[in-house]
Image (cartoon, rainbow, N blue to C red; front, side, top):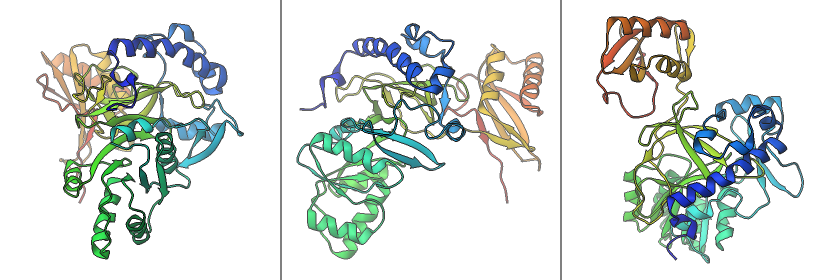
Length: 411
């Protein structure tokens, strides 16, 4: 079978109807069973949240805010609908620390779909080099592999020589872990004279996966794909054999919003990835990942019909300090919102004159002195800092989701 299940090839309109039909129930569940959403969504009727337009009116909860929220309400900031016991199999800690629950359901993190797209099948032995302690990555992949009927060698991180020896002895068909560590293992195997040519497939995550490394692995006979997943949400999107972007998972709603805001952007525009999950144990609604991406037009040639993401384009939190004052993307977005004559903005911070300088570059059909003065006044009002205004033609600013570009040079 080419696809994990029939949901991957649904008519996009059918998928959208199904997601929007599920959405009010998930919002109601979050309000009823979590203290955080009972407070955040107190003024919203869950039954009315049945479209993307309605969803876009809800507040975005950003990962960058979660640390303070969890400190105020341990262990999960009031966002979990589960408690200790049979329904919560494990709890993990990511750097921060941020704590994440793992429910007892099969394939809790939903990564089996990504493994299947990467060619993994029942009966495969998988060498898992993700961490098994503190962070959930090892369990995320292992529970997915078990859902497919695969056997897992729990390699974990480090111990390169022992990992190579295990690969030589056990002859696994697949690898899961970071792409850079796979290369380290293969090069160490060459040095040790250990045959690891049983490896034929890999699913990589946790870091950038450059095309050059993908091709290097292919030359070694390994077909490697990537998955985009987080400890909070599980699988968000995954690579298919078409290798044209990352296909969004069937059990999440993904929005691309202007950084620092909750405003959805049109297809093709780069912005922050905001995800609504249907996880009943950790029902995150409009969760801002802090990652930048963009929606690719059209459908994947592999036959999967869901929306595709361009891939990881950087971080949305571009907050920087200028003359001792923090400047946030939300402030730059607020300048744009106040001036309808401007299509797009980018705040460039440099120190070419020896001191910090801000220049707000603005795409506008008709720049004028009056508009420049108005923009400068708004910028100063919102940031408490002076800035220059520079007009430029439509389409001239990069489509990378950045609202703030820090180009300062330091000797």
